[in-house]
Amino acid sequence: MRKGSILFDLLIVMVLTSCVTSGWNDTTQYSFQQPKHEIIGKVTATKRYIQPFFIGPSSLQKRNQLTNLLKEQAKKQYGDTAEIDNIKFESSWHPASLLFYFSLMGYVEDAGASADVYDPIAEKISLQKKQDEIQQQKETVNNKARMVGSDIVVINISTSEPNSAAGVNLYIDYRNIGTEKIKYITFGVVPYNRVDDPVSCNITRKSLQYCKITGPIDIGIDLNACFENVWYNSTISYAKIQSIEITYMDNTKKTIDNIDQIANSIVQ
Image (cartoon, rainbow, N blue to C red):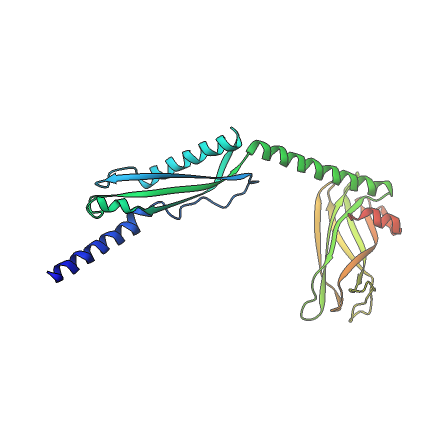
């Protein structure tokens, strides 16, 4: 008698384990990609499924039902233009499942879902506003450089960490704001250490280096250049442009070496 009781208990455990791993959690760990929107809130939804004789909605149908509940909740809380993203589903076994002859004749499941909420209309307006601000900033910088007679705007200048041989790379982001294509640009650049003193290359013993870019360089396009191992000195922290020489397609040249001109040609 005792042996039969133990076998029966084992059977119940096996059934419950099987149900938990296959039936109750069939909607668990299902989610969309991480959100790519400006999130304005979060919504949740729950639904209980009673499935006698294992008859009822499929996993996909449950997901669709929960998704619709999330959408309704999002619009109710955040307005008619609200949308949802990053949906996550979860489910759990309910003790009432034991009423179905210890889950042999059906089960009860508590399913839930959560999602981030965003507003595509407001998001579009916000994006357009940001783009307008960027364009306005860009025009301000361009006009500032034009006022001092420069056809080049330096968007950014930076140096790399010294490599194992103390070699330092130079990176320059720039833009042609002139009225014609440029054939060559030559930047005269000096490196500085952390205490703002100019330093020299340990090999060439020179501080000022001329870094040349070969075109043609079109108008109005943001470009970048990398110059490898311009200096060999492990104390280099940053670099400053001392001069800019521009060669146009007809071989005419313009040199910018005035401190004010250089300052107004670089985005601060």
